[in-house]
Amino acid sequence: MRFTKAEDYGLYGVLYLAEQEDGRVVPLSEVSREQDVPEKFLAKIFQSLSKAGIVKSHRGVKGGFTLARPPEEITVRELVETIQGPYFLAKCVHDHRECDKSENCPVRHLLTMTLSLILDHFQKYTLADMLEWKKNPELIADTK
Image (tube, rainbow, N blue to C red; front, side, top):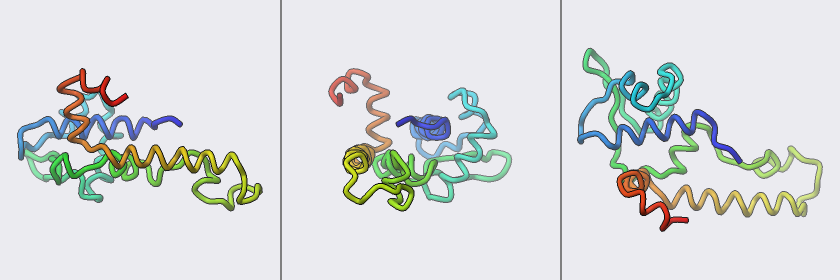
């Protein structure tokens, strides 16, 4: 399993927005510069996040982005799946027709259980949790 660049960039971009003062509209160029993310790539990611109601786009001269909801209401799973689509470890877990093995395949069963644990973890933690870990790195050791 490996995070894509889009997931990585999207998480860092949204974290940056979450660190700002409430209501501060942040230009995309600032997010791009501060997070060292290509602006055009980030624009596509933020477009998806905006459609999903995670970030809010503000037009005009002082345009940019804000979070659309409080960080406590945005799960890591929602972020990841909005950026990349449904999360799965192997095609056969997502669609059993992708594999000619039987429904009783032990590899598929293992991957399905593992995916369930990962998605539960992504659902358990929010953007607020990630902000807290960033502010207090000693908390990261407590989550291992």
